[in-house]
Length: 471
Ligand code: ADP
Ligand code: ADP
Ligand code: MG
Image 1 (cartoon, helix red, strand yellow):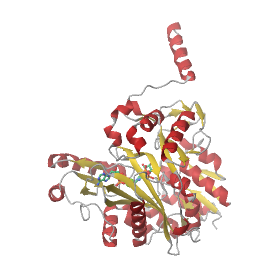
Image 2 (cartoon, rainbow, N blue to C red):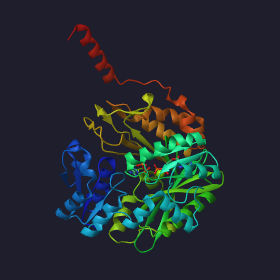
Image 3 (cartoon, rainbow, N blue to C red):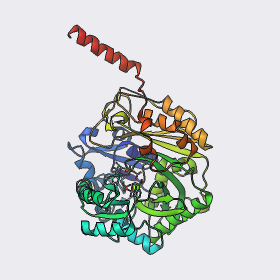
Image 4 (cartoon, rainbow, N blue to C red):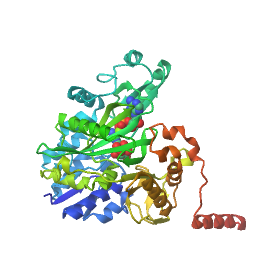
């Protein structure tokens, strides 16, 4: 087994990995930049090392992180999600330094991180893909003629995109002319690559993805699916496992497709194959070669610890389970609680958490790195907490979500909590039948009134008294 693991990440996922290490008797090493000096992952790890003043540079410096791992005697690096997790050069540097990268081989990251190369692999493997470009687009003219032949609407997408950015829908040729340069500039800024491709826009699809686990002994299994159709601007808000809108037949078909996809590229470690579903059609969309934000809900319904399996596989051990061992029970929902103000176009709302009380009780799990007094730095992702609930049936899981969101106290910043309370009451959501248009089609869900916490009211009163008194 591994003895000491460096966690090349921050926030809740770093804490999640530290917890898995602690349970497995593995020493954990955290890295941080000065903006994160008081972050929870720094406090919880067995050792922690500063990578300088710049809030981001340290987390994005492959060579420095690999050197640190070697100097501190780590035998592996877990990259988490985001940052360097899908950076093939980082995986390569690890390989060369004799440090195990907790993830697939660099060549597989390269292949699947490039969405057009991934489409090629899937085409060859007989996994259905959305109609669209073979390779990247050379210019606007090619985009226009391709769009003409497959029919509008189409999507222009950044080839190395992620996190819901670098994707634009185009409903007509004039739309495409406008959006094409925008996606290129967005892709260049966000991903350092100007490559884009085009695919048919599937109207009102469901986003269904399958969790895969694969070891170095040729075993590949799936842990069933997650439904991530509740999205805003192509970014997931609430995730559900299993999908309440799949038949068992569809479930098994899509699970097998995902296993076929992973086998086709000799996949190793945990990964996710994402699909779009419409009517009876299923299309491969992309593969994420890392642990995902929403791996938690799969853990709740299957009982499998995904991060533990990642570490075991990295150590060269076989998976703890065969496909026939994997069963699921009940429904789990995950709410991505973001430090954002839904009523103000979801603008980030960073600052000090003046009061935090975690929800609890049956079927409730919280993955977070915040605490009372913690100041959320403005340099990173706005997701500050994941609330996960589980219950035996769909309606009970929703009610448990409502109760747990209500239980929680999170003051000092604006969050997406009140917005989620509205979604949970909506009959379409409660019916379990929704697609990726649910959020844009229901702007009225933003018309809630914000209840102020007594301490916030007291602060406001004090401020106005002070103003009147001329303090
Ligand atoms: P998931 O795919 O696990 O559901 P997200 O798409 O929300 O998660 O991404 C998780 C984090 O990783 C976010 O902070 C996101 O910005 C970042 N991320 C994802 N893909 C990329 C990428 N290709 N390049 C840079 N950051 C990425
Ligand atoms: P990312 O790498 O940013 O996660 P994805 O390719 O997974 O990008 O797409 C993110 C989301 O954008 C999907 O979950 C879906 O809602 C939407 N989307 C992407 N491609 C299409 C498409 N061809 N048709 C309709 N929606 C799409
Ligand atoms: Mg995706």
